[in-house]
Length: 277
Ligand code: 8IG
Image (cartoon, rainbow, N blue to C red; front, side, top):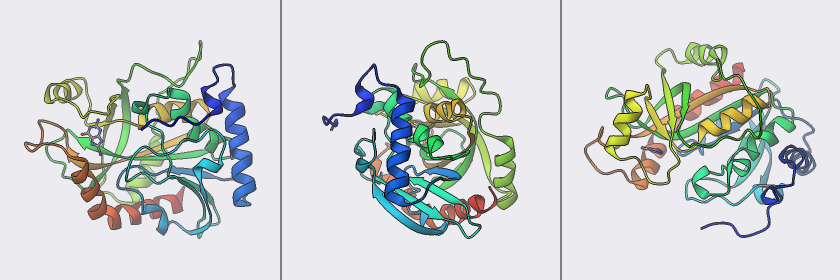
């Protein structure tokens, strides 16, 4: 269901960066934490992963923070958390993703990323649940995002904002993740608008143009993170093989189950990766 309450981002004359700054002020006030070092967005299947990364010092409903909207879906948590890692880093855990398919436009989609940057975070860790195109991948497998293809036709950038996206998904951070789990594979993430899953023909198109992962979230967020000067690390949990790659129909139930089963492994992985960032 769409969210009909007023959101300041829906005012076209508003400056989205000012609203992100106001949101960061809300977070500082509500968490008691002046600045964060790292931000982590939890996608489908990654919901419990934050519990291992450190001590949660504050949990706030995203609806208390300027510009955030209600989560649209079961499996997406509508909270922001401040977590203190054993190494002393402050992590802003974002469990309140807004998807492009909700139809509120790119400003709302990337607001959490801009807010994270405004809290001081220099590293943006983006996670998602996604479909896998590679036949050798199995549901429940986490993979690193090496690059993306944005098939939404949209952008979070406004006007003549020419942003370089070379090494968008930081090689340095991918190397750090692989030192922790050398078996991690990587692939190119194709963002479709959704919310329908792809047709098998669309999956074949994604494969032909160099894609390995199909999803509905991360590319627009990564672009905004780069605009904000953050270093990006992206993980997809392959919750299903993409349409036509797997022979059975795709279901949201299957996605939730794959997430639950993979939880222990990906939680440990994320905690270990965050410890070295
Ligand atoms: I979870 O197969 C999940 N999200 N586009 N395709 C797209 N998004 C997804 C898929 C999928 N699985």
